[in-house]
Length: 496
Ligand SMILES: *Cc1c(COP(=O)(O)O)cnc(C)c1O
Image (cartoon, rainbow, N blue to C red):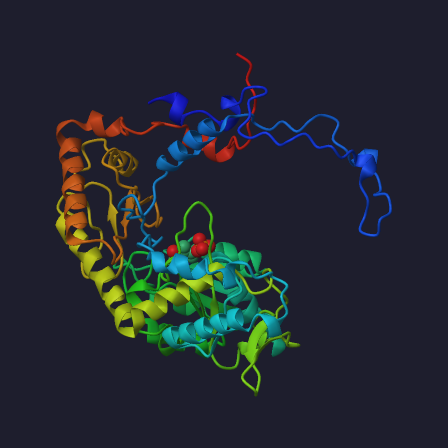
């Protein structure tokens, strides 16, 4: 690796006095400055002035251009390669979405523009809200939350507000399956609710018999992901919904990965009362590294009034306005959420149309099953049968090689693939979770299958090459624990 090109920080490339561009000397002194009324401008109070010049890197233009261009090619994204990161739905994001989101009428609008002067943006918001209500089988949606987990928190706050509005303030228990995404129990805890886990059966679905004794008049909600994080459809869902409703609780649907359900089944029809969708997964916004995201929350009829303020409402004359209703939760995000993500989602929905969305869901399921069936001899498939958009292996089939899921994931990097999700869900020791998504061609899937088989063969014949991987990346074996616990996020100058 050429550390000059790839490894240095822009601060390390800095040389004192070096410039990319020089501003002409100003001939105005601060004493000459006036305010708008022709009066002498006030001095900046000395307490607010910097004592030392700001330590900015000093580089010529070419160094800066090379630095950022080289750094950008060190990044991995859906636009550069196959990204089968289970549960994250790393599908290709059509570029037309970017064009729509970057439209000057959207991108240049000030966030505090009054409703009468931002009718186009509010129309986009309302149109997407209606489309998601149709897709989810819900009465209304709010698009305000910034992420999936933020949507969960908002949805649970709606549920809490509903129970409280009926004087049912004991209901604080949230039942979460052991296969759930980690954000589910975390969101419930942040919402001030108590998390109770329900076990899964060996086939990966919720154990209805284990659920029964947990249902009492303290239950606020049951959170479910369907298809669950193992990619398996919860076929007992009508019975579970009936049981939870009979106990007075509400059903919460984690729709982060709605892909396989698009146009096929609707959470509202399955008995769910509140749900969220990750626009940055199912509805096509580039994501990873922490954002940008959007986690709209839908509710069945009767719960709309608790949705967070402001709400976009249509007045009798057809204009759109912001509403701050008395029962609404307060504001949970800056005004109306992550608008550019909403714009991409609506562009995606309208360009695919209902037929295109249904096809996307079916293809996501087909691709996942294709890869699963092709690899299940070399990798241990703990749960047989049809999966939806993703599936989980429990490491290599041959457990005698010493090669773990972590080694396989790192070896994949040598072949130019992003690693699958590993060690999640927690149900298996060596979880390796693969989600190909619908946008990958059969050729890409075949190449991936061939590489995965090769790695399994290497593990049997020459395990050391897998265990010591990756061999071709700029960094090979960082200390994962140290990096997680003590991340070094600022430049510390080392004199050498
Ligand atoms: C991604 C995901 C979430 C959390 O979404 P964020 O936007 O990362 O907060 C929740 N549940 C499931 C099933 C997910 O896959």
